Image 1: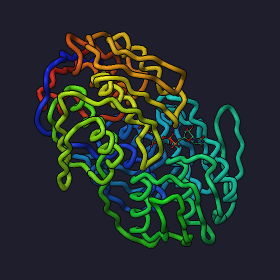
Image 2: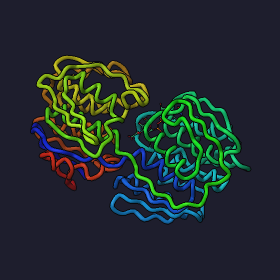
Image 3: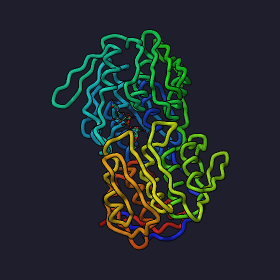
Image 4: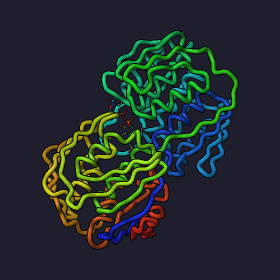
Length: 420
Ligand code: EPU
């Protein structure tokens, strides 16, 4: 499937944000950990959620998913092996190792796949699980882990900040023998949400949202029927805001959480935008002349790596030059070569730094996205560029953005999905 975009036109109106992709996975993993009937709302209808459902059904979970609500019954599981083929499609598959270790005492999984944006090791998960008493063996590229007793409580300092490793150790520690202290933990709102959901179910977690999380282990989750609503997608929100800047269009992004956008709002304002904040909406009114600024990606509450590419497209329209430095992943700037072919003045300084000179007159081209977020950036570039842009193999974009072309059409975007 391809997207064909006729760009160079202003957009206007309101676009509603979906539930957080990277919030849905830990909620579903937590539901598996708790093992009781659970209803989750605001789960985005994207390819990776369907992959997740398939992965969990293969473990014996009974899942129903309709109208963004997922109900799951997983009291009886029949397997502790994560399907190899599905796990290799998505990094989030690693999240299901913690519930399986806790509930079945063992788990087998391949090295998880996902977007090709760098090495993406799993050493932090393995180190944490081992400290909690798990043993590991790797044969034929499949990791086999076993934990003979209740997980041990630990005092663990993450050598690098990792959102998914924070989710996993926090989940396993809720059932550990004693009190676990995690330091240098990720502070993303999705971590805070996961802790809140687990606490609703009976866990005893404090400090989530700060680098220090304390988890008092419980023996088991009390019987309960659980219901929880996922937070809005931070990355989708930021992408739409930078789309407004790049196309110099006034857009209202609704169904979002403005409190999660402080770094983005700061960047937009420094670029000269007027941002009007509502209870659950942000309206961005771009300036006539965008001011160029430098950014460095950073863990939350800093500027998200997932927004590096949409920001760069906005920067191509600034009056002057800005420097962008990627600090989280080492392979996240390759997409810039196609942006250069679209007419962007990009100087790639090294694998992690690029200088962008604006304003550039972008021209439509045929491109193919190396990853989900670069795919969104190409959509924004295509909407900004004069002429026709064709984005090939948009399945990678469907992994994280729900019916994106239909939602953008409501803003007046000329974008359609075509089968080549
Ligand atoms: N890291 C290690 N060892 C580990 C785990 C991570 O060295 O065992 C390093 C990574 O190499 C990276 C850094 O720590 O340099 C951050 O990794 P993190 O674990 O936070 O990232 P992730 O779990 O691979 C999640 C999101 C990404 C998002 C990053 C950073 C999910 C499923 N993925 O990835 O989202 O970019 O956190 O915020 O939640 C996306 O949605 O497109 C995406 C890539």
